[in-house]
Length: 408
Image (cartoon, rainbow, N blue to C red; front, side, top):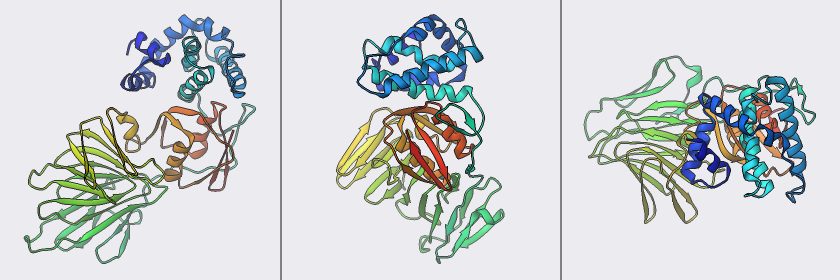
């Protein structure tokens, strides 16, 4: 990413792929020196820009005053006009956007990226109030420290994995189920021939859990996200290997040319030989989303079928089956990599993720039309997470027991 490419991005003139590259560049701390250099060259324009009369949006004036106040405060606290703090970077983009894009859209773009830079340069816990003062939270919800996975065996009995030690958990026919030191669940099968019928187990992960790692009997790897489940045979036999899921799971499949691997969810089938891919079937998402990281997969529903190449995603909603030619794989896989990663994400989608991970409920008292970009560790508490979004002054939250209330 060069400066010309960065300016195309802020001018809203780049392709989807270039947009992803620009986001990745901005979020990479090693580019801070280049960011600061660019800001130094446009600092006067940042401080002098006047948004008055440039939008019918009544919030624009308040938002812009908030940006300018932040610039002045941070410049005094952390830098000077000659060496401004890097998290104000995105304010400089107004200089380019203002003549090409509606003022309201420019402000939204600036603030969405400002979320990340404010996040990276501020620390502390608490609720960021409308007065801009940090207050110690009265209530908080910690990040999950482990998973609450439940293994349902073929006879219907259940094993709570967080309350049992390492070692052999159960014997299912000729297959042994073990819990390893890292918490992963591993199946080892030495079945006695084609006459033996495999048994079926289900691994379920409720809300409020970290992902769980499962190794199937063929050596294929599955990572299961919170509020998800997978049903699978204790060993594979015959001409195909088939599992079914709800929620979200990431797969690394061992290649067996004579026995394709099939992932099913309702009437959606994903067929592979050996590859890496992610399947998101959450009901609060816009349909089923299947994303390919490596190899090739066929995704089908009824008579319709699409083949994906690495970096592509298919979205299925109703009768629609749309292939997205290029998606941000880091965003797709953030949950597995212990991160929240938003690249222009609306508040509803963000809060849906919080509901699953922290096991909370969300109530909306106001409509929040803005989108946010941020990279946030999944190790922090709810109040710390919400504080980072509140730094934009576009959205505010209240924690009431296990409920989060969203307001302007």
